[in-house]
Length: 317
Figure (cartoon, helix red, strand yellow):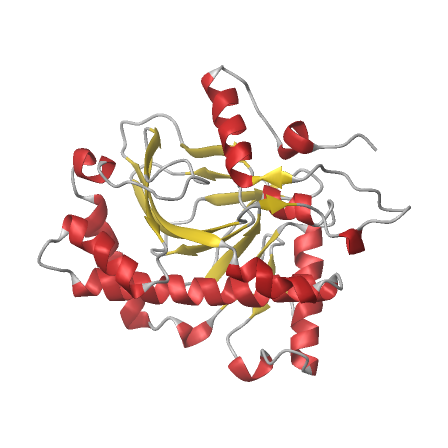
């Protein structure tokens, strides 16, 4: 049953495997909660219980710190093979940096990434990274299947999953007493299809905007992920699901570590015909993820204030 956090963000329980059998009454109940949450706020907190054990969480935190303590020059050498992303390493504000690993749910790819920093291997990093990515991918599979089913287009779900790409980003926020700004990440929506977040330590900072315009702090419990709808899902759903507008603010003397699994739609994405009728005319032209990223970057380089998915491919109705 869907609950709400103290700040009004939906909380949905995915911890019991026996309740996640497609077609069961419990599945249908959770599916209803998922759609209500995504159509209402564009995000929700997913409780996952012991699917990621405490031992893995502790191991991940220590390995995460080791990774981000490498010199900036070492992290900049990591290349992303995914042209749909904005690259592997980013240092966008005084207090925020991120490093992305392609195909983190593949144990072989985790090992390759690990070897870039630890030539003799780092089993703790490799194992915990792969475990997290696998569980986050599994949540995305469940949630997207529920979305496709709810809108009567479940026949397309296998193709969607099989043509997706992903990377897992290690996001570090570190604000010392001397840094005046509290901005970790400016207000934005994610430019991909869906995002799954996990707050590795207990330092909060993610804020999401509700439909009435209020900003609320997301305070997920340790055994949970946060699911976020992105711009491409907004296009695909013909505005049934709006991308979640969010930002990150950091208090002084705070370090925050977050894992983010970004799922990208391969090839052309367009609204399924089943979601279009006289009452719901198509609102977007077909979109290509790589072209959208390029347009967003070009706008930023040229000093643009914002560039939304509606600017890119929206249709005036």
